[in-house]
Image 1: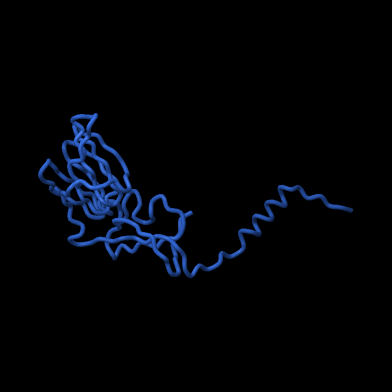
Image 2: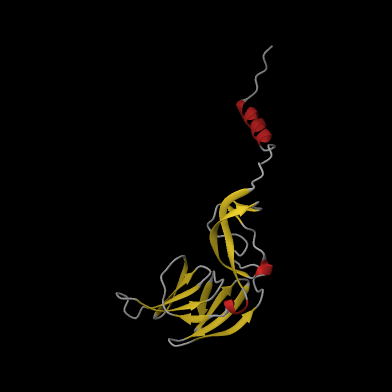
Length: 178
């Protein structure tokens, strides 16, 4: 007597067994590691315009366009003449991943902190800083590199805030995104 087993049951059994196979231990892998900043490195500063590298979001506040640079700060563009926008300045905000503007004040993340910033064409001033506002990690991602799939060095908040990620060969990596 021949017993017929439906293909669906065989497939489920195969997948269950496949899930029981232990993953091989990785001793070395290509991935990314965090770049940290702390102390004076976290100061907000007005700088000359710079090239765009890893843009995040755009906010329009007449006549300016503010463009976020992931982990670095905000580009300020004068859009008085839309056919010819002009880069004015860059506000360096280490660890910035998200910002908005209201009543002439910029509200930005700076790692896990929330900062408020006033600016004009000549100066920038940090108005306030609420430390650990985002519960230890930034609302967007201080824990894992954005848009990354693969191994990365786990973030250690004791080393400072993450202001970027760099490619590296990792020894015994413990963190991974899929």
